[in-house]
Length: 352
Image (cartoon, rainbow, N blue to C red; front, side, top):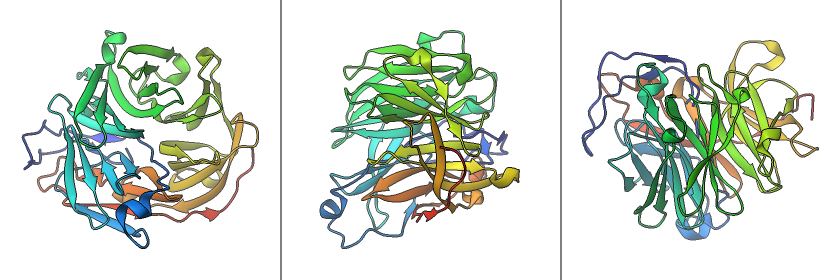
C-alpha cells in the first residue's frame, strides 16, 4: 500500500453494515498484499473452459486493497480498506461475504495457506493521520467457511509506536510474517496463533511509510518491498539480522507481489525507467544468484488512475486488482472494481 494521502470531504455509506468513517483518499496505489495463489486446479474447480480477462465486481465502497485466488474453489478473494471483510468473487462477478469480522477496521493483505486464509488487519486512518495510533493484527480464518480461528494482536509487541499491518506471507512450516508500514518491524505468528517480533531494524522504516509487500522463497528467506527507498530486501528466516538490500538493475517501489513456483517475482510497482518520471507497471523480476541481485525480465503498463495495488496468480496468469482508491471518502462511493488479467511482455533491465 503506497501512501500519498489527502483528507476527503465526506464519508460514504456501507449497506452491508455500519462502517468506520473513511477519512482518507489515497491518490496512488495502495499494499499490500497481498499476494496471490498459483491456482493449478482453478479451471477444474470453476468449470470454466478458459479464465476470464476481466472480472467486474459491483460492491459500492468496497475498495479492495488485496486480492488472492482460492484455487480449490475457483474464486477470487478481495479485502477491503473500508471494513473488516473478505469477499469471494466468481468469474461472473457474483459476490459472497466470506469473512465479516466486526473486530477488524480494515482488511489489507491476504494469503491463502492450505485450508486457512490469513488477513493483515489494520485501520487505514493511521496512514494519513499521525494522531491515530493505528493497529496491527493477523486474522486467521477457515478458508471454506470464513470462521475465525484466531485474531492475533501484534501492535502490543511494540507499544508506544504507530502501526499499520500491510501484507502477509507464510513459510514452509506455516509461520506467518506480517509487515508493519508505520513501524520498522516484521511480526511472526505461529500456526497456533503465538506472536513475536521476527525482526526489527531501522532499515525497514521508522519515518513515514515503510514496508509494503512481502513473500516467502522456499529456499529459506523473505523478500520485502520498501516503498520510500524504492528497494527490495532479502531476509533469511534463520538469520533475520542478516537482512540485505537486493541489488536491482533499476529502482522500483513494489506494492503487492507474489513469487512464481519457478522463482520469479511478479509485482505491482512504481518504476522510473531511464531515471524518468514515475510509471505504474506490472513487473516480473528474475534473479540468478538467490536474490542477492535481480533484474526486470518482463513488464506491462498499468493505469495509475484506477489504483492497481496487488496481483494474484491463476494458472500462471497474473491478475491485478483495480482498487479505485481515489474514490474513498467521496460523497458517491465507487460502485465497481475490476480484477484484470495482465499479460507480461519481455523487457529487461541491467543487473541480476
